[in-house]
Image (cartoon, rainbow, N blue to C red; front, side, top):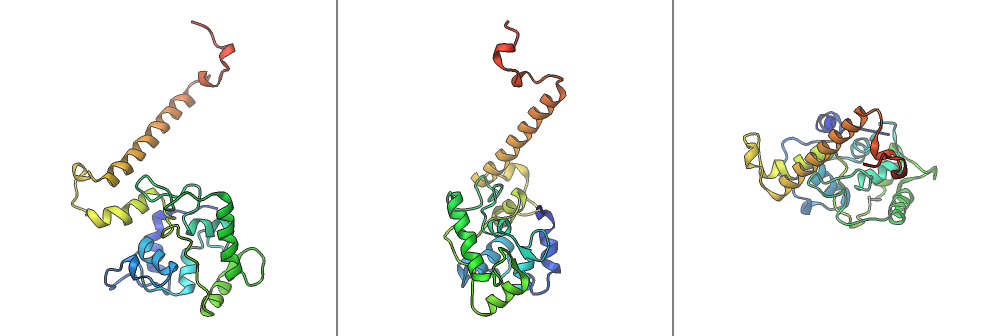
Length: 210
């Protein structure tokens, strides 16, 4: 299962039930529950309905939430990032706790008990008053590195007129350091792939001694 966060801003405008325009700036502290905090922090939207929330977080668009999609929404995916050198949550979360989080969400919304939540189940239970719990992990970073950095830092402190030499905040430095490390790793791998024999993969005892 994969998805591209590059299309998220466009997708937000196309989903019925979402209204990101003509709203006064909101802060996560304005949120009445975790889902609202998440939408304000991660999508800059404070006006939405359960159906649109579900669709926005149905990452493979198959009409249901699988356990891995619940994990991603809460920032628990293996590749989750805050876009500034950190992970998807505000503290480390072990596998047992991740499984417990998914289990609690399923208990709240999986009406037929099949291990998945479809849109009608989520809407039904939301209308009955069930809410996504706040597990104390933060707002749930589920975008890619560029998306998270842009919405959490660049949009707040910079604008389209910002020059590269002005990107000197610790968050900027951490973000671009990660990019440099990724580029260096890609260059090393490309150089290794160009070799007919990867010397580093040969056990020491079989290497020619110089």
